[in-house]
Length: 447
Image (cartoon, rainbow, N blue to C red; front, side, top):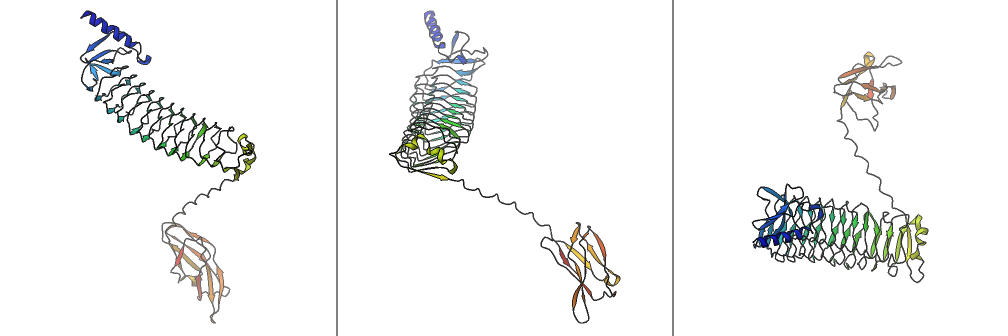
């Protein structure tokens, strides 16, 4: 028994040599607790799982042992254990390298919200793993973490900043991925040989690695966000159904980045400063450059043997026509200058609702007393202008006798306007008015 125990200690000591340095055990002392071999974490206050020594295939990982929390699933802890199901408890913060490597009968995994990192190869070589839920605190998904799985859909939460190289490599049935709004980097070959149909990157993205989406032969469209993005060599190569690319804020396009696509047209925004050799080898026919300064290019940047039209800003025609690829005599394509279409003027604001029409009463009974009275019975001041008096003589001839000045009548008040006539006879006078277009006033009850 003593020899057996010593052998276990030696085995455990060797295993700790390969533990990720961030979660290194501060002692080689480890002990068995039921189906588990555990050790202290470096903080000496929580524990880590070193290995699983049970025989069950449906495994529930403990959240504590002897009252002390388990926070780390160590490197290779459940590798090649023929697992059919596993439950990872809330409280686990790190899943180590190759922790669940090589469990071909495993079909589903739920990673709780407490987990921060998923180590390299953590779930690699699980060819029947078809369902993965990634918790909302994971920030990094390690190299080849889910390589060779059988995922069909995937949601990357907003917490994830980086997806490691080959993280979802060879998930051939993976048709749909939703990227969270915090994603910054996708490393080399992360989704190589997947089955993606459409890709929509968030505005947070800045880097797409070498061959990251190479050989997704169902891929038809790619849309980048507005942030500056570097697209590395062969990032979207060998995708022969790719017919739509919106480059957004892309700045650098690497060698063979979109080689072998079905693109016939592409628009390069002003943000693009480099297009490397072979970036668009394929059937590209029409190219539009939006920037007045040409990006850095060379002889092989565009597939000039298929090109028919290159649209560039009119005031930059000379600069584009001086580029190296434009000097090849055996190929013919046309440079077309364009001017930016004027943007439509903004819609005028909606006019304010006109105030409620109010009434200013004019009392003409006082004419024989030498004045007229304007009465305002409302709660707002009213103005009147263009009033005038008309004198009708005994023959029925009317003539303007008196024009009244513009007046303002305060709320719930009245004013008297004095009038006179050369002969003092006012009894035939009537009041008329001339309303201007911008008057918001109705004059009623005038006689």
